[in-house]
Image (cartoon, rainbow, N blue to C red):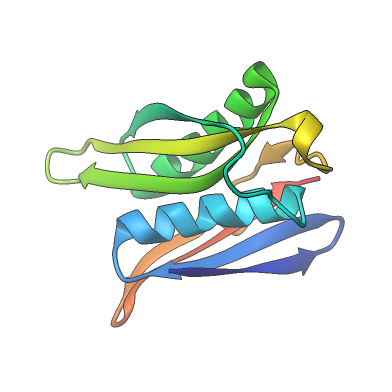
Amino acid sequence: MSFELREHTADVAVEASGDTLDACFAAVADGLTAAQCDDVPDGVGDRFELSVESERVESLLFDYLDELVYERDVRSVLPADHEAAVTGGDDGTWRVDASARGVPFDAVEAREVKAVTYSEMRVEETADGWHAYVVFDV
């Protein structure tokens, strides 16, 4: 799994890929972390879990990332070291069960990402796995 930060007018975008949809979701979330902080310390912070459901894979990714922004604000932590397990699609419902390490803000110098956007969002299966592109409002 991998991600790259991309400049996008006044915003920032994350382009990510993974062998599986799970890996792709986690890579986008890692990109969200990188957009907020250049250096995340190892071993600091406790893991927390979250689950999100949606009707489409694109809206699931949006809602998952939006939930990470919410958790950041409520817990006063920078979510890092993401793990995601995506299921569904057959019955019209997608679900991600995920976890992240919540790094306390006093342990990092973080920039604010205000929100996830649907602008140019893509989630697609490719011959090599999965690919996603997400723009964040900064």
